[in-house]
Image (cartoon, rainbow, N blue to C red; front, side, top):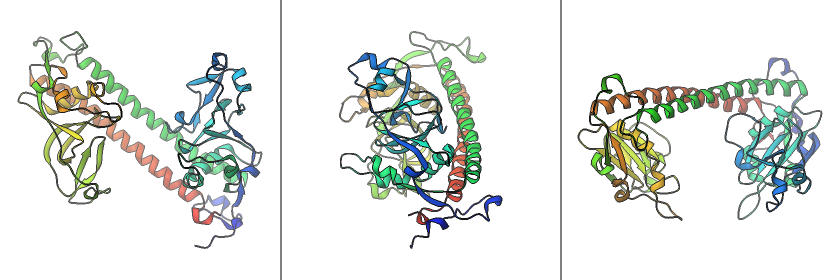
Length: 406
């Protein structure tokens, strides 16, 4: 497709007061930023460089939340450390871009910060709103990734970043776009906090609904079971049968769902969808290979379990959902063996100790309580995902399409 004149680049969505304005103008970052800075790391062998005085940002801390702002960092450096490394102190409300491992995370530093060599700092000039620059770079992530070079890992160089262009409208339109997307981000961040609060509530309930180590009754017990018998130590083999799922080729797994397909679970949860299923009902599933082995999912209805998932079938007197929650609480990853490729065998899992209440009704009561919280988490997570999808679509409309950009 032929590229349009840079001055004619226009978004599909434009606020009414700007519809008669001229098109956006493509400008290189070096022209619209006061400076683009390189990061660096002070000598780690000198403890005096690592006194907690100045926030020091790395790519590992970026992209973890939906909040555009980063308020503090896990690691700090001293003034001497800053003086003895390539990083400079970025002023507040600069824009930080990760340029390797990975390329494309973008944040706004709320306080002055130094950055490591995996980042570049962009200090907007007077004609550029910092939040507009932030959203422009978020929207341009795929273009930035494509500019990365290197064999071992891709890296975006400072010289490539300086000539990287973004389309820019006048200051008033920049501010309007930043305000619109900023308001949506505030909703997303607030909704994310609501989801995290519910997850924290669930963790709190789980800690009191199951006995602590060395105890035989939970701290919180439903009234009808307070005079019931103590829980008993067993092993997982006493509570369930466990067997790995069945092999399936990658070509048999579809990425997108359509009618007539079934969920396919592997070692790390949902892998896709298949035309056949291996199980029907409700079964806890344990991932058995890789760094995340020991993670637990609940398979319900008709589904396919691959050989990388252990299917847990409760024995008589054991409620499936209660077993799912108790297995999740066991932190099975700690029983993994192997370093290059950690794994969990059925033989190892069968010997894991577990505390079991004698009455299945008590198991069901606990499961019902936790399931209700899970339902709330799922509903609020759906709202969060809907907001994110809305934001993505809005950004695609508020910025010129990629094919219009040189």
